[in-house]
Length: 126
Image (cartoon, helix red, strand yellow):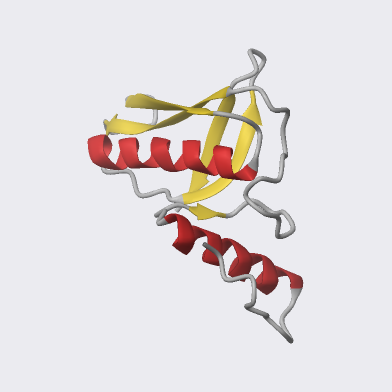
């Protein structure tokens, strides 16, 4: 559980945001880092509607000599709702699958792009 008694003083908004999500990351035991540009909010804060959403994450499985010669592998998880906690949990699952199967190292959760079918495409950074 996050220590709500912690106070970060004399820091800018970015540092406050970083510290908040770093504490959440530790409490959850995640490897992924919540790197979306948003104010510090609790895990149950809804940023999307409440329905479950498929989250997909594609990364390079094999690469030839050019970007035209790339094999992509897609990993999936379901976010049970649109809260920060559910989205982060789905992102962590996708990352762990990608790490285990193709050795992916992109652990910064940067965005979720809404697709026409209502699913979300996970965007990560390294």
